[in-house]
Length: 452
Ligand code: 4AD
Ligand code: MG
Image (tube, rainbow, N blue to C red):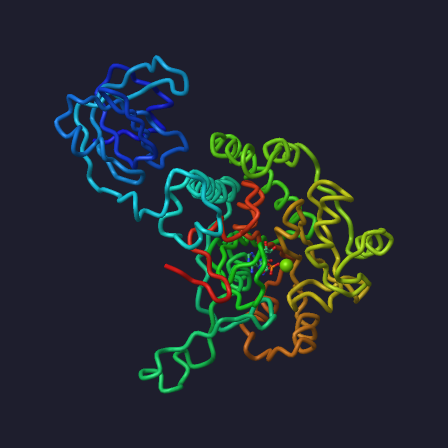
């Protein structure tokens, strides 16, 4: 039975015989023994192995071990006399299960650039930074389920293949059966695509179960090669019946704070690495987000601040434009210096499902903008009035017959309801301080690139 390095470092059962399995990070030889640092992915820390020349495979195997080789080591755990580690394993059996040729193994001891590591996405989780990202990602995913389950939300598995375009931005990837079999007929009887959002289907379940959430992959064929866009990303979308925009914003703020605190409580070693090498002051920033109320302004107020500022923007600002990343970041980083919720955007730049405000010009939308990222959450109160919704759909050029099921939700037992979408990768960027979104998803898909 193997023991994981993380539990060894936490419980430190010295003088016990343990078996540890992992990959060699470094090796240092002295006259009669070698120090071998191994990592098993359970945590950032390595375990130091003392391999003495009395081991029968010492001369021909251990002495030639390279970075990246896999090993299974059995030995006695002892308090380490040297600085740098509390314990070390004195090997009495040292099996090399997979060699890694030092001349060809791409990950050598030195630090590699993230750009280079993207070219070896099948090996990069073995590095300190990408391994830490993977553990933080896993913990945040767990935290999401924990947050919603603790509050009585039911998880709904919304479809990946869909015939409705939630955001209406024309970014649907088409789904077609293979040419021979499909003979140009629609496999599903009508055009279908990969979902851009599970919201519309989440609404169906919210108007039956009350509070629901969906957490799954979403796809957008948008040609934006930026540090915050992916063609395939994961989204968390809660949807709540009998809940207005105020309630929606409250859940979103509580959720973000909960997830940040949970990550700080459970991933402190990994977050310290990011704080030290990737984004100085990260932990202080995260703690201050947890401790401070988010700012609130309307879109109209935001436009006012932006037009009065002396800052030169690439995209000029006037009422009616969609806020760009540079505007969002200026507001959250320079003006408010904390997360900020912008509400009541012009109806003309937002999707058909958002509830029309009494001014007939704006909708009950809310975006949450955070320093370093810009938009991390987009949500709204939904239009629950049948006639208003129909009019908005016709205006947007949507065939209402295709969405009769969606309109039924307003025909039968309609209710005030709201929800939002949190971009999971943008959350991980925020928590880790990683500059590029390609580093926070195991296998990034961007225009022109989908290795593995
Ligand atoms: O603002 P968006 O487009 O909202 C929706 O899809 C709604 N249907 C959500 C809802 O109300 N249930 O996307 C939500 C979030 C954004 O705030 C952003 O964090 C993330 O999804 N996002 C992306 N993340 C990575 N790559 C992309 N291409 C993204 N597009 C949106
Ligand atoms: Mg948005």
